[in-house]
Amino acid sequence: METDAEAAARQALTEMEQRHADERARLEGELRAARAAADAVRRGLLCGTDAEVAEAVSIVLASAGFATEDVDDELGEARGPAVLATRGGHRRLVEISSTGVVLVVDPDHRPPERDDELSVVAARALFDWWRVADWGSIRAAVLGEDAAAAASAAAPTSPTFPEDQGPSGWRSWLRPRNGR
Picture (cartoon, rainbow, N blue to C red):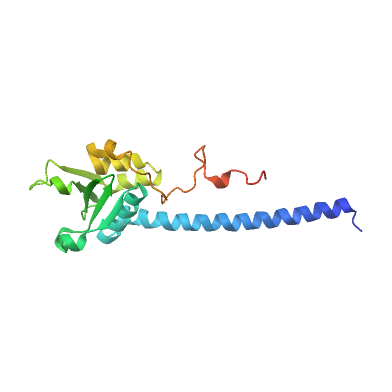
């Protein structure tokens, strides 16, 4: 025979265990989704084929606030994968080489030899900036001198990683919900 206090305490424990199980399942789902998104970029930038690198570069650029467009068909297969990145009225052609290097060219001022107007970025650098959400470094690498002018362009509306940061930089799920 339980007292009312014992029954209330037991019920509270049962409810707490259910909340914990629900929260754990939700967080495990978030972790699986975050890993899947990160794996696609990680695999693409660090050891992917040309097409995988191009897809990963598109994800990274979109995360940094660029509109991206696959332009492989327009440039021809002999050149390799390429993405047109646009932000704040500035456009850059991002060519992917087979050596894990990303070449950024201003398509409006493309020199015949491409020596002076070419920015070379290691795919590993793009990955490192992406994984810590350093959008400014990505924009600067792609836009060069135009990065400051494009900084006033709209920020990314849904970055790929990390999601939902609170004011302290910690993910929101680390903060208590409803005072609990």
